[in-house]
Amino acid sequence: MAALTLFLLVSAALSQPSSASGTGTCKCVPTDSCWPPVSAWESLNTTISGQLIDVQPIAISCYAGPLFNNETCATVNSEWKKCAWQANHPAGQCQDTGDLTCPPVTPLDINGQNCTLGNNPVYAVNATSPEHVAAGIKFAAEHNIRLTVKTTGHDFLRRNQGFGSLEIWMRYHRTGIDFQETYKSCSGCVDPRWTGGSAIRIGGGYQWSDVFAVAKANNVIIVGGGAPSIGANGGWSQGGGYGAAAQQHGIGADQLLEAEVALADGSVITANACQNIDIYTAIRGGGPSTYGVVLSAIFKTHPMCTAVQQRFSIPYTASTRSKFLDAVAVVYSSAPDLLDAGFTLSGFWSQANASLVGSAPSGYSINTYAMNKTVAEGQADFAPVLEKLSTLGFNKGSFY
Ligand SMILES: Cc1cc2nc3c(=O)[nH]c(=O)nc-3n(C[C@H](O)[C@H](O)[C@H](O)COP(=O)(O)OP(=O)(O)OC[C@H]3O[C@@H](n4cnc5c(N)ncnc54)[C@H](O)[C@@H]3O)c2cc1C
Figure 1 (cartoon, rainbow, N blue to C red):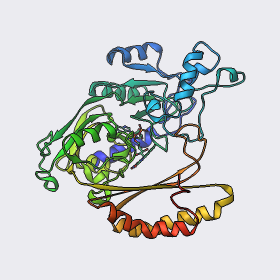
Figure 2 (figure 1 turned 90 degrees about the vertical axis):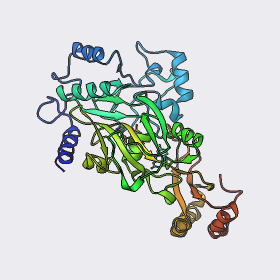
Figure 3 (figure 1 turned 45 degrees about the vertical axis):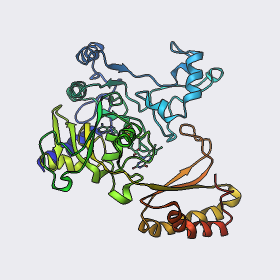
Figure 4 (figure 1 turned 180 degrees about the horizontal axis):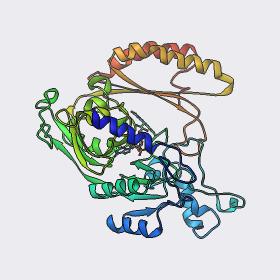
């Protein structure tokens, strides 16, 4: 357990608030005298073969200044709400948490607007190899700089951000997605829970959509994120991970057989049921970006099966507030029966005109899946729920 304790301490130190001086456990930020000079950043850039990015706010082209550009700003405005587009930027975020420090504005509105990096990283290592990751970790430790890790920017809690940080950007760290007819541990580990079982090795910053395609091509299923744009090896699996087949096969934490992890000292280890068991335990639900940077991971796969899906969205309006809440209560109180019937349940609250993600109307949506059921069986399981919703005035015609 000694290693785990060490990394918890490292993590606590990394999350200390910054001070003006950057001394002690407080991290250096760009306004501090301890912030590395340009030459140090240039040296890091050379070490990582030119993969260092001087991060700018995504919408900076919409503001007066040297980077103002009408055409780029128009693209920013049209693409802003797309998660996939945001994921292509080291400072991109999928969710609006109301803390934008450089929102997209039309060029005509620039007067009086400020655009700052906010909590986005100052620099990002666009890592494409374990050496890049290790160099970034080492540089941040040597210069007492806050270190952040990001793959897709889906995190609701903004755990991929840090004021004045150096980011390890994992989006393009990709060494392939390989199906294994039988799980092959890199360290020769024989895991008694998965003897002879099949698996997929995910080599880096892939999204679940990439992994689902490989699973389908090999006639297996894998428990993955409900949104295919979520990263497979980042916050989803390290936060527990819920997905369509979780009721049948367990959550993401139950699927992870092995991971290659870069630790706070820059070393790379293999964690599985046979070795580095404390790290293996911690990265299966203990929270992302805390114990190390996951470079690759091997997940269980399961035999292909049929699945049924039921989804509907209950609209919210101020005038139907009371009925809306009653309808949500119907869904919540039906959950135990639906789970017993083998459904996974995912609920989404949405607010119209949210500035960053999608454009769903205000309301509550539910998305459910069950494996190895016929459509008729699924409909029978859902009939009591839909009947209760119907008595409240919500039916097929009113769902969105
Ligand atoms: C539209 C949407 C739908 C969602 N649906 C589901 C769902 O169905 N089921 C579910 O369980 N969750 C769901 N989530 C939540 C999602 O799983 C979390 O937000 C998760 O943290 C996203 O992980 P990421 O790596 O893609 O995102 P990021 O924002 O890039 O990273 C999230 C966290 O992981 C860390 N991290 C990223 N990569 C690594 C790495 N390689 N090594 C170590 N740390 C890393 C980051 O530092 C950060 O702390 C959904 C989120 C969104 C926005």
